[in-house]
Image 1 (cartoon, helix red, strand yellow):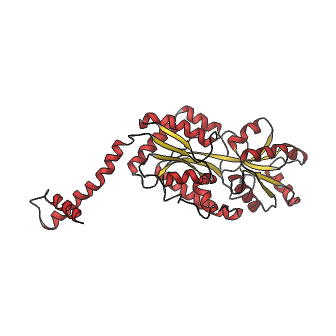
Image 2 (tube, helix red, strand yellow; image 1 turned 120 degrees about the horizontal axis):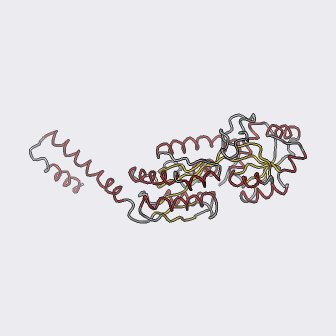
Image 3 (cartoon, one colour; image 1 turned 45 degrees about the horizontal axis):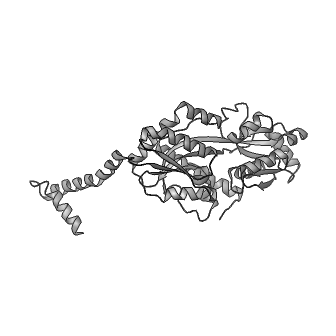
Length: 347
């Protein structure tokens, strides 16, 4: 308290010819400027040391690959190395929580995703972070559709040419069909349960320990269909090893323009995709977030980055930090209903 009074008196001494109410107003204004000055100075100096970029999933996946590519691209604009660190576990929660609890100075980033920021809040009753309050969104990187793919022998033997045929078969044979996914609460699981609810069919879910085992089960005929990430399924579709029936997003994919969406195939209110983007810790000064947004948005526009995203079935999707914040909130609200429909729960 004494230090505050002393500081106020020193500021009032700056206005010796001003007294009364006007003097107090000017003094308060000077104190306000002094309070924001450190933020501006921090933004001007930022970054002055290497940045930590957490990927909350194992090495080698699409998020990890893109994080490492972007880390190299932004180094020139930021003038500091960006060190990628894989901290996987608990569906992405471990890595996300590290970023949520870091110092709010812009030196810790995380490649968040639809799971960490929109799905997990409704799956985990004890999520250790708040996906909105504990993060400062920087920019969306990409939104990638999932695809509904079926075993080729099953499709051939039962004359399954499109999603309508699959639904008709499921209705004629309730409980006979099964679909695989990368596990309970995964994007593939939620998509399958949403299809059941929207199309009014009864099929069984088989959870596997990851998307790759689920894909192998589909190829071997252990499961009949699955919702898979387009980037992972594209080579199998191209080689004729699986048959694709639909994409899960509202718009068709640029690399599969001939494949209809689930909605076009007759299942209404179906719009699911895998997205990922850059976040930093909540409370980071906005000028610092703006610097990060500028650097990552520029990187996303570089030709080799855009080409990498096209191979994943997506265009670059840079946004302002405010637009990305709105997007995350809307996705979180959307998945509340979807998780409820699925009945999935993880503790």
